[in-house]
Length: 187
Image (cartoon, rainbow, N blue to C red; front, side):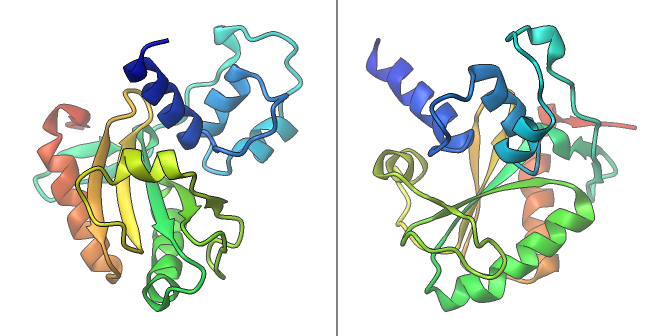
């Protein structure tokens, strides 16, 4: 396996839950990425005994209107959050992110740098060192930090470092999605 392939597999593994049980099949892991509730919800509803691609449901589009009049399908994206249980900025920002995720329908994958969750994301996954290196090759590791990841291509786009309010996050999301104009769709 080449180094590039190994890093891609690591990133896919990290986005699919990093510390998942070894018995979960690859298709279960793919389903987990599409499911905003994660692997546990996908496993609970899965009785499939084969890994047939035809059994993977395509998620319902979640349209987000951009300030330029176009719309982006948030079902094609997942927000990856790096946080710490002892970070005062995370304590302020994480509930904002969770509320926005519930309002708009985008999924969040929460990783913790210090191994602790917080009130908004108590089950955040410990971030393995290789995941941190993959997401922060040229950025300082700071919390909270959010990335927007395309679930189809696994392209990771930096969103924010630091806390902000709802409007600040939505404005940045709008800007990043407009910059990825080929990912937006007019309706």
